Length: 230
Length: 218
Image 1: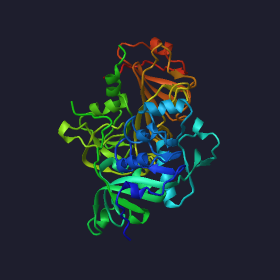
Image 2: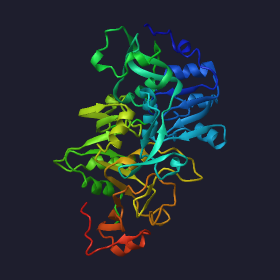
Image 3: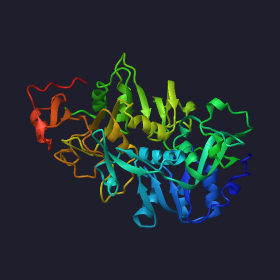
Image 4: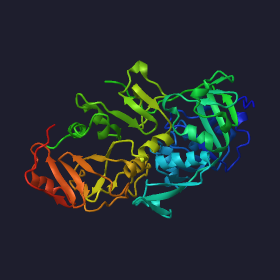
């Protein structure tokens, strides 16, 4: 039951070209920094990346865009990245824009074993094209499918060697749902602890969902928009 | 005189009621939190996963693990809590969030809204806007009445790709407060010094004017 691996390179050893990845985080907050750096080192290409955002030019998923390792992104908002825009307009990169709540729930449903669900988001808009519409209680809904990945890669604040995870503040974002949706789930943590050190009443992701966990290092935790009290 | 963005935010703040859970979009809507009336307590929801969002932090309290949906560093108030994005949109879809305030490029007189995409320009994505407009119990749009060319943004129908259909309940613009009714935009209030004639001239969609239209108190 020991899921610990030495580092990001070992954790990501079997990711190959064309893999479908989920990467946790919202903007640059709570992103798996060590794993992204390891994907750049590894040089795997033609990746499909499911992530709410695409990082900025020189940090987060922007690093994988610079090296042209991403073929397709599934995201809700990608507006902070000039390289992303360039690759999209030149046709090098495909993007599938998905409403944020629909994206979160598609990922959540994969972790719950539910193949599809109905949401009102996007009804009557261009994202409804080709989707099944159903009426419930007089309101129109779109059918959306669960979203799975070969690998889910997330960062937690604390995790134990059995894979139980605890997150800090707003870093739960997409990461807890993604951790449950990967065929293989890889977690990097700021603090790797022994079983029993985490309060069982306070676990955000039970270890059953986690396949590999490692102690991360050198977190930069870059802030995208620093705002302070006037 | 037409309201500036602070005036629009102040007028929207008058719509707040004690105990409301409120989601404020980026831009003018965010300013609404500066004008919460005395004696009223609301909880701000940030769709990345927080209730009880507080003001921007002091320099020494900045925490990269604590941001809002605009990716700005913020604080959390006593009684606040964190959750993941799936839960966050669950509470939005289930109608637990009482009021959503957001900006718009265009609103149609049937309540359709367009605020996420301009064809031919870089598409940044809809973020949470489609989820919010499809599900919120009450949606107030904060917007300028006309675009920089002076053309009305309150239209018979939207020309830009839609974010949601028949969902806007009320508009607070720099010129007026309007309700969206089955018969079109109903003029409720004028900005100080703005005439009904000017509002009529700058509203392309169906406009209902009944009786004396009071001035806003801001």
